[in-house]
Image 1 (cartoon, helix red, strand yellow):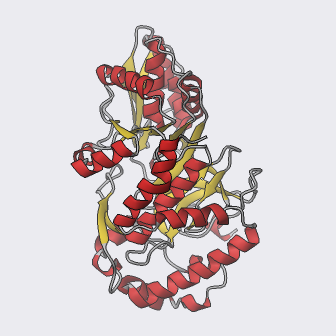
Image 2 (cartoon, one colour):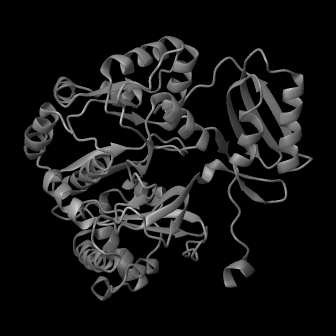
Length: 460
């Protein structure tokens, strides 16, 4: 049950804040909480109509898509199913960089400039309209309420790059203080900082932890080392996003903080895409977003086949992203969730394309095939695997006292068994492994381009 202060924030203070910013997130959240219970056929009909209207508007208002539609002979008025999107090309980051100006709609409203962190290359500059921002806020707000957490409940957010933290101006700090949201810098995970984070969590007693799974898992492990009890703080949920959530991370976070872990999937550029409910289903924010999975050649995957996730966000045509390539690999589900919501499901999010490695013979495998060989070895405090080429892989290890030459030989042997006997596997012992500027941590990075599927397989 919400406290009177939470009710004040959720019912009055935050709505006033959103109204002042010109956002419609309050009414949109109410709409989403109704539509989540629609039957799949009703939801599908709504999405098709919305997609048709969205694409028709893009054809009239957005120069880039007017040219694309003309080039491929696409008539948005003829859209009668979500599959109609398959007639359009996938939008890559390079296309956005080269066409930023013509992706802005004629007569667009206020656009906010954003950028991605560029963890896989050059940062991406893009823009969001007010409608897109409102829909993402509403979708996240709906999802946290699935777990009994409302705006105004105390939350601790382990997040952010130094740039983002520097943008915390006085107004934003006041807003966060009023809404009882506190930011902890994920890029600084030193022993001193971890001590401070544990103490802050114990003193604040948040209803929700929000952050990268790697960061929350690291804090949880540190609390265990410091013999600090965290299970009695009344934390309702640990909401994790922006990285792949591994089973071991889910287990340690849940065990130490005494709460369930809710996996969220989204990105600043792609939107708030999906979130896990208490029944375990990863529900797509389908009222706003169409999610497809495609093969490397851009064709749609078959049922039960994993592929790259591409996203169409229908919330605004001021700067639309249609069939936007996320760089993530996932699998769509044909099932419905036992929670009763009619929202479609993501069955699995396997990670980024750079989370996959390529063996010497061209076999593609998930980085977990290598992670399993390292993470449970005695004395491995931290590790990072980087595949430089099919012939060379480097493993960075922060070692503890139990790590010895036998452990190093096992890593080399296991990696060669999976990648190929002629592959050079180098183990570098380091004092620390830095995080990315955003605060994220990536266990596996491959510089090897994933091979395209065989033409015979495409034609099968």
